[in-house]
Length: 138
Length: 138
DNA sequence: TTAGAACTTAGAGTGCACTCTAAGTCAAGT
DNA sequence: ACTTGACTTAGAGTGCACTCTAAGTTCTAA
Picture 1: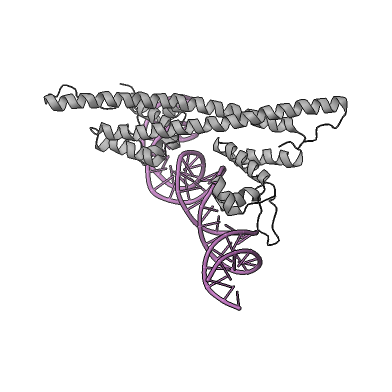
Picture 2: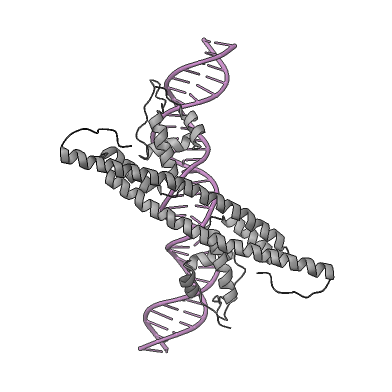
């Protein structure tokens, strides 16, 4: 069973070694196995956990909530329903957030098209040298 | 032509009065008209601008970029293409971000179903009081 | 065997986007 | 006239999630 050094994990996960230690210190990761030297040895399981935590993080779960999730995982592993509840709440949060992003994206796209129209008009004005459209460019 | 006080704007936009002043101080908003008393009087145009800025902010545009956009708006209003370029870059960023969220959401949903299976199994184990499934609940 | 890289820790520092405080001015109601 | 409350400013403080530093230990390659 082979293990990885903190740098190798950092490379593969995109987190910094600093961040990996920070996560462990704050209970997001259970204590990682150590070599005789005291250096951390990450197992494949550790990697899978880090990967999932990273997904929670990238979808905006605060560290506090991740601590809660990790605590349940360690202290009450049989309470699967509690862990599921956290994930389901987060699922709804993420869905809401995506919808919000999409609504705002549409408004931004609308403005991009508006700017395109404005630019076409600028072109015409320039070519014909007629100050026909002097609407404010909002 | 009627104007709004900072509190009214705060209410309507969901930003705090503090944040509205902060935005103005940092050049995200051009200087708002003042009453004789020095109090800010927000126009309908100001409101539209704040609304759009809020959309940029909610989709994750950093304050720095919003400053750049606002600067172009004030100092080079004819450079519509430059403003469009900023929005188009941001559009791509937001699309990428949404895709990332969706990928991560799927992984979370996958784990939720996995937990459901696990819970069903726990039920069975409990009812039949047979320790058949002792797989680790990951 | 020894230089240099990688690791360890506790704790301080950073960057972002607010968020609040203190001290003061102004306007409306009683 | 006076109280209440909203407004003003400059600047300090907050919370989050890292990110780095300093001082020391250990591994690896020449």
